[in-house]
Image (cartoon, rainbow, N blue to C red):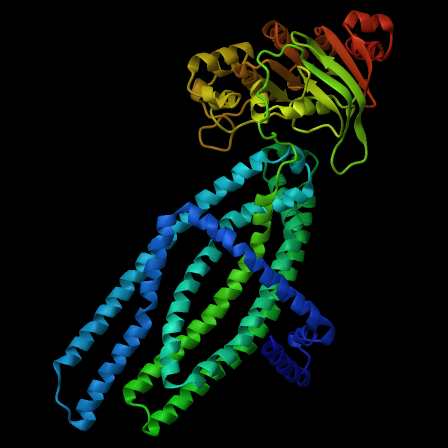
Length: 637
């Protein structure tokens, strides 16, 4: 570290005497008040190296045999340079003896030439074998870590996906999962470079320890400087993550089918393009400034490292002219010094690259360390079969993470098996929140929810989900076949034609599928070739089929028919009433013609139940429900 600062101070003194130029950044790099910051940055980089072993463990898990074979062949390749150099030395010494000392031509010379040829052939073959195993390992690693990220993300809480900070981390983790191939390959190269450098260094050390020290001393500052800029690059990329997410969003807005209508009607293209350009220009300016500084520093350090090599080279020439070294030794040492210098520089560069990549891996490993707060307890109970008492909310309160507003306030509610209940209320009154709590997408922040008299948190989550069928208003439109769009409700039934078709019939989606050219095998959406898009109402019928395919004890519809016209929605909910006999059914709708079908209607206001009863009971009471019903009915008169 001291050598690095001394080198930087020397550079600083040179620049201070020179005309003012972009290189003046180096003056600030070594001021007394910023040396502590520099050391702190180095500390962060060294700490980031602890990320390497966990990632190497992931690499090992992706293909142990490939890793072992790759290292074996790299070790073999790393011995080729010193072996070739030594054989070349022996050949030159043989030739020198014949030419200048009239020695007899020996068959040994031809054996040495054959050996050098064999080493060259072997080196070429081994290099290609190493490339082959690198390619295989890259594919296996990409597959393995991508699956790990997908699986881990699926186990995290819903609240994580509603946190912008989580999205930044998830985005970096996704990128790091596949973009860190460079670090893996760097580790392999480092292994090879260390063995090659060790053998060359031993050969140089045999002739003179000072040669090796000169080379290392001149290359070390360049390594430290490169590492410093690698840290600055990581910090820059970290800062730019939110901006890059905005760019991705704007890029999507500028080319998506969903946004196309409003882009044209509201003439938004120029506005979004300007914003995109402004953000990109800021990123480009920041990148250019750092790259300019890095270029100047790298050039100055290159002069220092090149001077070290030629200083050693001149010393070897002097020893040869003085008669201490033979011509063969001169050739060998020249090649060894050049190769060792190059390899030492590459080792420093590779270490810097690994440290750089390790910094970027912080978010990937932090992502893998994230644990869901909503999770099954050890020895959790299976969901009751059948449900006998139903759900009971006891003084339930709930506040979404990152807010202070209580969505539910001391809510008390009982939902029994066989009941069909409708939840109504203005937006933000807690209707969907109740659904999320029943399905344990969240846990209450106060109070508790019982299922058959047992706290919901005592049940095994996956088993609980298997007994619940839910369709939300913002259901997914899978760019897959019609069959797969239904089968995601219970993927085990993907190839069960009878169940798939029965679910489609129950949701009235069978009429939609009959009109498709490929029927159940028709690709839906426009993302892939041959895909056919559907109307909003047709997509909703397919989504409803998922809930029916699930054949669960609890069926919940959270405004899933918003895109249907009033008549179509009425037909859907008539079918819903018929098919939920004996089940615990809960639905949310803003259309009171549908709501009146429920046996019990619950009106939510300010996070509490303000009214409940049948349609006739609530109308007779003349309260909030009656007012809302009359207001909506008036619009149809």
